[in-house]
Length: 143
Image: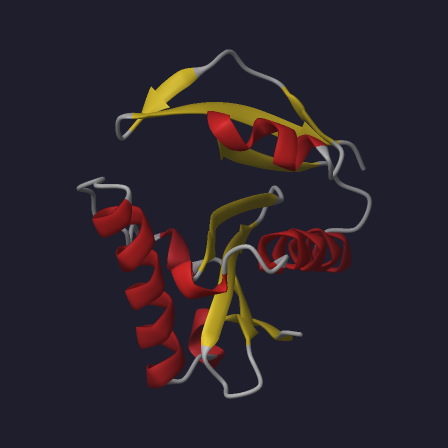
């Protein structure tokens, strides 16, 4: 079971911010071999959803942007296969509904995860496109 917090960047302490940037780099830059600047400026305006285990270790993260838009969805490699990704998406949707009630939610899905996101009510709204060498598709969940 994860313990959730959702806050603006200013409310994150230095260790939490470090854990977020480390996890995102570990997965998006190193594991997926995408060379890009992960801290892209959007973090300054985002809400940051962190899921920590009992020991306080960051296991899941998502960035929530006004729109609303869910991005930077990531589960720690050691936490995969235990349902943490599903828990993360349920919490991300709940936070978007709390922060931006009555609005559709968007995300850019890696194409191989399209069925996963569809299980939460997201539907494709674009053709497949490539971003950082990975096929993606834009998806939207009705309000």
